[in-house]
Amino acid sequence: MNRLLGKTALITGASSGIGRATAKALAGMGVNLTLLARRVELLEQLKNELITTYSDIVVEIIVADVRDKKRIFSVLDGKNFDILINNAGLASGLDKIQSGDVDDWEKMIDTNIKGLLYVTKAVINSMIDKNYGHIINIGSIAGHQVYPLGNVYNASKYGVRALSEAMNIDLVGTNIKVCSIDPGSVETEFSFVRFHGDSQRASNVYQGFTPLKPEDIADIITFVLNSPPHVNIQNLLVTPTAQRNVYVIYKD
Ligand code: NDP
Ligand code: 8X3
Image (cartoon, rainbow, N blue to C red):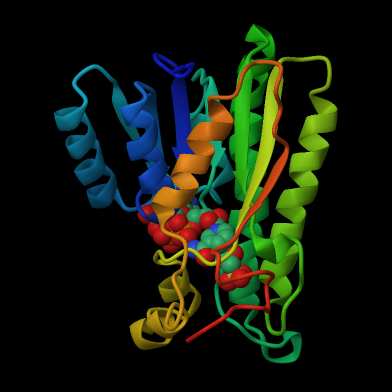
């Protein structure tokens, strides 16, 4: 049964990776989409692809940085969504605290935590008004276990998991559901961004095992969103079969 036909969804970080794959999956379910990210060309390319393939949906793009509080509240003012996918996020650097770059820390905290909060705050009250909505926060296995050099990224994703739990408590008594989907290793631009554009170092991360594909997470997001109204899936930890926790990855 398709419970998503005709719904409206805002996806942050829709220009690549998990967000892009989720846009495609939800378009296939007949969901009208608002795609938000900073890279306009990638958003336009995706929009064109989606409206060519699925003539029955409406696709809008919003070019914005989730860290820009003023712009986020202004571009989302008056908008009304059934679904919010808080996916925009990044790791920047992999260092000890004593050698870490403060600019990297700010990027991660401002995007992964504060950006998620701004976007949520901007749309949650219209969900409450109509007593309907589903919020998916993309956390990480890094929000379940700290790993060497992960420090601030770990903290940001522990924060996302805490906020998902908190939102569920705050929304008790409403029909709005909240789920934190926490992936292990997914092959996207994530490591390229973490290593500041070092493509060799990024591709090494995924050597010797089969990582998750962004489409795997998009399928899971679609399943969670399509659950019956009385079912609230609150947290899913999803790893490649070769990965059993943040440290234990079987590599050939
Ligand atoms: P990608 O780098 O492929 O995608 C990240 C997306 O976030 C891009 O669309 C990027 O768009 C957007 N984004 C980043 N910063 C901002 C910002 N300041 N404002 C608006 N959009 C922004 O990586 P993934 O698809 O892997 O990452 C998606 C989420 O999944 C992240 O939250 C990440 O932490 C999480 N995750 C990833 C895992 C992995 O192994 N890949 C594992 C666990 C969690 P643009 O640059 O155009 O703004
Ligand atoms: C991304 C997965 O293990 O690189 O959140 O932190 S990990």
